[in-house]
Length: 85
Image (cartoon, rainbow, N blue to C red; front, side):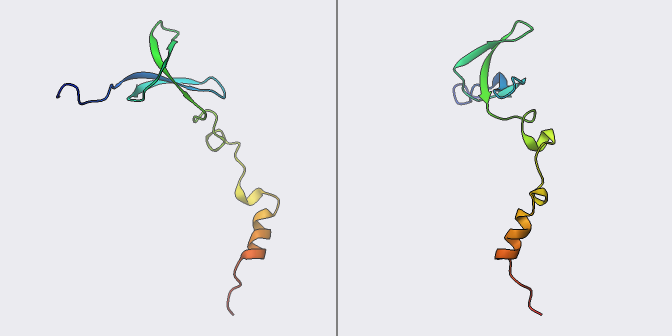
């Protein structure tokens, strides 16, 4: 590999700010903060708003579009094209 042309690829701790879930992976993301892990390592910290631990789609709390109290059906009735007979 050539020197000085590659990004800084290292281990980074990603933290979900909504619930405190943390995971460590390798990344080139730039960070300004550090975090001390339970095993004693000090890693760069990258803060996230949502991860698979808090996103409604992955946690199963997302509501289906069809179960929204008839709103979808009202929209289809109002703006849907009628089929030509």
